Length: 455
Image 1 (tube, rainbow, N blue to C red):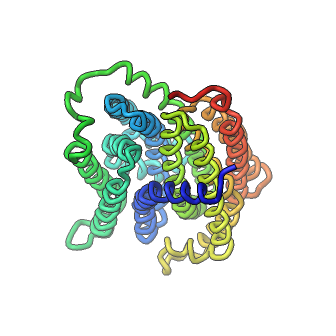
Image 2: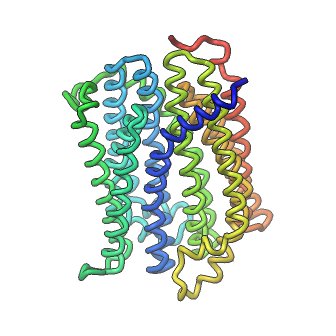
Image 3: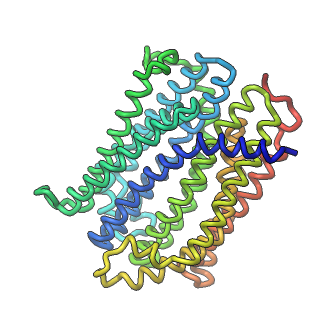
């Protein structure tokens, strides 16, 4: 058992490391919320199209981010044991892998229209989503590189720059959206195209800030991150790939669950899809808090793993789970008490579709309240498992939970039983609950309990 003082100290350590990451994640989601709010004011059709396009982008981005997520525990463990060369090797090859992944998926972003039509989406919405992605899709390159740099910096406990870079990007995104979507300050009214330009410019700015900091900060000079960047290191390349691809597929399983729900909402109607997009933005904003703490737990667990401190590993796990589950209980109360005002923030008061979208969105948030504990617990369990560099079995658990249970349950409840949008979201809740159970069991009963951790 750990003393209350030990738990309090670990909670402070997680908070100090996690709060800038939470702020960075919230600033990141603020960009998507800004897009949703401004496009919702512009037109419901524009909002629905960008929901489709942004969902497609996010699914591919989150798969490619697996190599960036792999950097965090690898760098944390290497840094804890004083292996500066291993820090550089892992980070540099993660950059290589991320750029290669971006090149591989760019054609899918460019030709998104036919793919979306084949998935049953309205032809007009699919073409509008493709137009958005033919500009915003180029952001896959800077976005993935930024993810690697953020993981590198977070693992070295330099999270403040991650926060401020993301805040700067969010500010630029809001300004360019306001100017280019609506045609303010004498700019042309570009609608969806304006939102795409703003998104791409934001990603480039964030890359410039993080890249310059990683290359020029005196305290990071010993890692020589970009010196002879062109030279391959196939050993590190393989190590990052082996750890990263299961993380990417795990993230795909979860993001694919929500992407499939967006597709199913699109089958019901445009207003249902718009309400789904708004409700999902709200849920995602709360999820960013849990994700930031999960990232902090990954770093802390990685440090414990790197020096073989099993007691610290257990302390990190207990404290991290307690923090996210406490926050989840507060979220349940918020979603049940004030769904209407939350949804209404995203809609033009004069929009004739507002009352219907408000009603649909409020029903979705009521269901979302049911899965807050499960969502918080499963992302913390994943963070802890990544800290001990266990990614393959969690990938299987996540795939079973989200794809073999969550998606079929969403279809069954939403369409076969006729529950509509709330039924689709109830299926999400079932998938997340199963993932929480399986991933928690994996961490607490995993092989590192019997096998000594590396010294």
